[in-house]
Image (cartoon, rainbow, N blue to C red; front, side):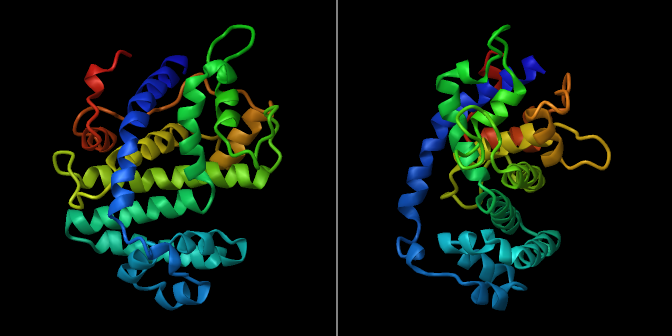
Length: 266
């Protein structure tokens, strides 16, 4: 597992450098979108229309509304509409728009997006994710180090178990969308040239890393990883990290971000 985590961190370093192209995407979006408030009522009225949901997602309030626990059912219905539209889509452009939306909903409504942003900071000083005795990378310390401050305290104690599990399960769900997204890429290029390929690949990498840890039967990924962090379960010796070779879904996302995995020293 140590080698796999090292591979992940090496790739994440490269992606953290390319993810800065997010600024380019930000400069190209509708600057008035954040001023457009998307209420639960508006989403409710559009929950069966994938195109309308795509338009509403330009506003941050779209995700804020779906993140509200009282709108949990609405979020489920929105994702069901997106899933149905992906299944019916016949062009890569539509599939890419919808899978990106599905992944963003899973991450932005749980706090997963903040976790992705924290990864780069953890890489700067890896002492926080190393075992104090052996000096080796510690999966439990890595998990707590990248969690939002409102979920894990400075000493690594999980203070909000429900939020921790929601973040982990959100990454697992997002991984399915990123896999579909990578599959849709033809030669590693997006139909929409404004997509921040580096930021997408970075989120996909973290999602794949978490989704690659298989929980015991009858236990969610969130519950399992929480048990590991709390010392109630042992970390797996290894996990089935997905194929990152050129042409694979994750490999395509790396290619689109301008990263050649073959050049990284694993």
